[in-house]
Image (cartoon, rainbow, N blue to C red):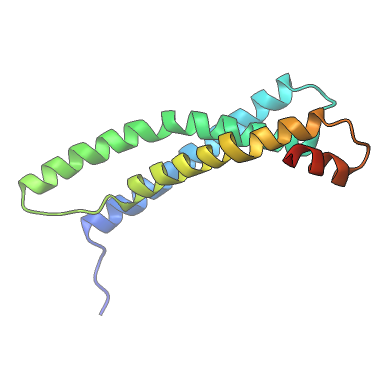
Length: 131
């Protein structure tokens, strides 16, 4: 027998669609702005790394209103004795945190040193940037 989805499942799917749509909009707007202002000599990997940094920074603006609405809905649901899940919000914040951490402490310093290295080969620049 088919049973219609509960309101919690429908709300979670609607929330996922909202987060994905907001993420897509942030990605497109960030890509257009970065492409417009980036120097033409910038390599594709540097451009992509900058784009990820822009998207991670601006996605917070898209996620905060959804997080607040979910917190208010959670408080209302708990008042009625229900316990909805907030997996989407917490996993989104964790993804943003760890992606930003890796970008700031691993990828960006490596890329900065790679671009500043005086070697002529890719492997030489990579070795120099890892030192």
